[in-house]
Amino acid sequence: MSNKPVDYKLFFAVFGLVIFGMIMISSVSVYSSYRVTTAMVKAGDAQEAYNSFYVFRNIIHVLISTFLLLFLVKIPFTFFEKYARYFLGVSLFFLMYVLFA
Image (spheres, rainbow, N blue to C red):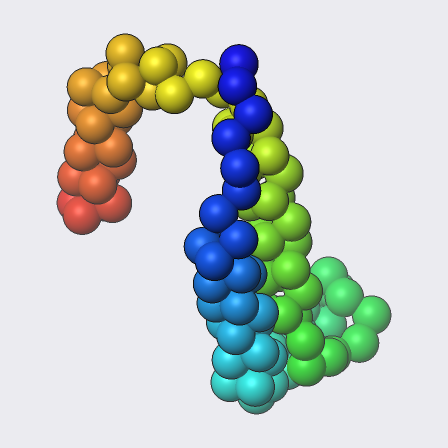
């Protein structure tokens, strides 16, 4: 396996978009986060209502995605070339499932 150089322009562009998206979610979702957590308090699932419910969820999703990226980057590209048709089939199946479910 060869060590390929990192494309820093692409890395910082994606990193900037992730940060920008997190800022947008934090500024837009204050009211809806408070409504959701108020309902959770009434149901007994939370102690108190807070404004950052969706921001915390987004941070968790970004962390999971980052660890998944670090894992998948170690797999040789030939594996994905070999099974590309199967990945396409599975992706189309899930797209149809979401469409009709």
